[in-house]
Amino acid sequence: MAQTPRKRSSRKGNEVPPRENGETPKWNNPDILKMIEDAQNDLTRERTGDRAKFEVAFNDAERLYRAKVEFEFRPAQFVDFAADLGRPRSTAADLLKLHDHRDDGMKWFEATQFLAGGRRVNLSWQAYARDRRLIRKAATKDRTVTSGDEPDIGAEDNEQPPPSHAERDQIAQLTKERDELKAKVTEVERERDEARAELDRLRSQGAANKS
Image (cartoon, rainbow, N blue to C red; front, side, top):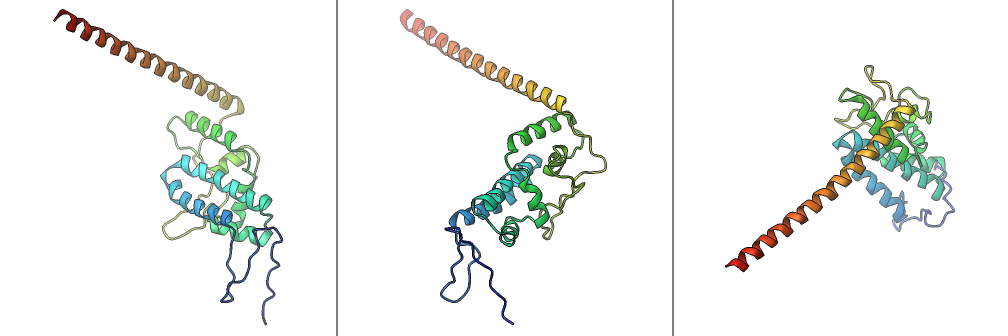
């Protein structure tokens, strides 16, 4: 029995016209294809460390948000799109909740990493989402597992407790003051180098006058 084709989206640019050979392309919108391409590139970048993996999660959250709100994907389309990003359905639903929390997420990451002091601590996006009560799950499978990959299953048994809001605010303030001091030091060093260059010029000029 022939299957009933899915109803196509009425949103302009997201329609799926049949090809000449009768096949139907999965996506024909260049913006959607670009998001998938960027997500595939992020798959490589996130292997460089905890920070990259954390940032990539927020990148995917923005892509999923666009798919749901801007392109008005139906549930089946949304699941297909998430799979093309490398995210299973349950993870995609949780990632959506990260939308518009990137700045707070990066502050949480910095504070948690700083307070860990080199100790092993859970720096996953799931830990952040649980700490902010965006999700309730104790663990959530992250990437679709392929050969040689291990899923992120959330908190480790020996992880350190996340910092309190007061501790994070304190760390954020100290980080800001540190950055301001670094900027001042850079300015002083620049002025010092200019003064040295001027002194060398005057010495050279004086030596030339004597000769």
